[in-house]
Length: 600
Image 1: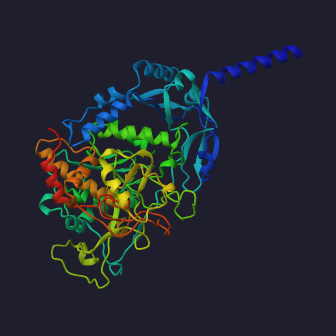
Image 2 (image 1 turned 90 degrees about the vertical axis):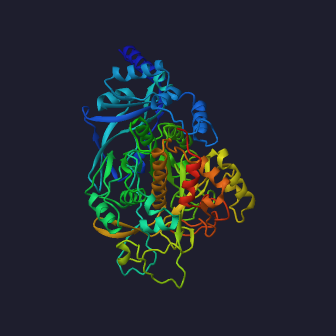
Image 3 (image 1 turned 120 degrees about the horizontal axis):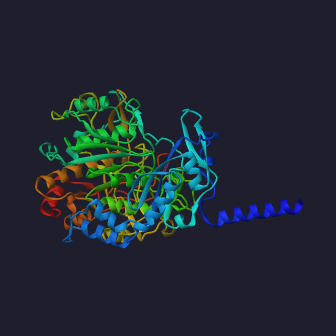
């Protein structure tokens, strides 16, 4: 009897070892459980409930993808503006057909429904029973202690058979918890508020020279998209209507809403984005796009969609080296996650889409060092704002002179009769705490080498700037950011039927997005293609005539949202790691684009 039991035990152990040896463990423990104590673990999930997840397959020909992206985005290339179709881009990077067939057959065998086979990603839905079998894991219920909302997530490890895992780079949708809401820089304001200089669309148009006869889009394909992440709640159409009326703007209709939308609980982030993204490019088709995940999920969904808007503003970001804290990296490092997402940005750019991202609101210290406590890494970067495949947008502010008085402007909209609107003739400098609620981000990427299109200007800054942080705290040979800046302080928005003030690079990014939509409008009306990735254009435009930009030379980004630190970057003549090339001179930039359009 003992010998029989021993033989059974040995056989069971052998089977377990054989099971382990034929699978690759992609995650040993779900670290998000410990990081999110507000989510209380409950019972094991009902086997019949549904879960959604994505398998990102290893891509091919990334060198070819980059080469195509570079030449089609470069105004000096004969291929400039000759964008590719979805299928043409898929043909470059997709996993081999045999690989995809193997993965899909494995999933289908276990009862998983494949929703999308995108060539380099497979989007799936499955019962808990099927998902547990596929990944050799366990799903349980979690309930939020304050909101009483419920989600399903796996616990412990998960794995795939070796023959499948060797083709998979990343899995999302199994482990990560919803991130806490983005910090709001909104404060209520009344007409007797003693802080001068409220910014409204009229302020922006006047400051940057956007002519009243040139800020109305005429082409049906002119578009601007405001992207939100982590299941951001929404804007209210009634707030937008009242905002428009008080700013002498035609009523805006958001034509396309993609993703979760809850108009009954609007928040400051989405409200700001929609009210200012739409007001700079009047009559452009406005898109509002939300995703309950992070950058990679958004990029994949966007690339697969058709049609799409031609300009996207992303007022979100997180330190490059902490991406795996805000989203599940499925066994990848933060650097690998960034690199995969950068490939997705290139795919989107090859469709003729302009991507803009905020440079951050915590200055050069960044979200990794908000209270200036780190002595080992006093500076941090941001993603996607430090990506070389998006246009990084910083923030400035208008500074009223000490003797500034309120002046009447007959052309100003009704809102300026109730609130002190900023005088566009005031000096413009780096947006920084404590005068503002935020400090504009800027610096050098942790991971991405400096692109050739910015090499001349960044090299000049590094050789001539004074007061740079010690060299061990940033990689000066990497991508410098931001690329361009615009006002990011004292924006008036209308939220939940009341006026309030907002600060942030969340203000400046949609404003630049609106300008790009207007440039695209002229191009489309005249038979040209859209601008797509605009960074090579911006730097060549600066090199041709630096007065295409308003140089910002005062201020620095040593502070965060809470206090001022020892290290950061100062504004200076030319490009700098606080404001980039400077603020736009709209009409001169429009003229340059008209004289150097992308191909028909």
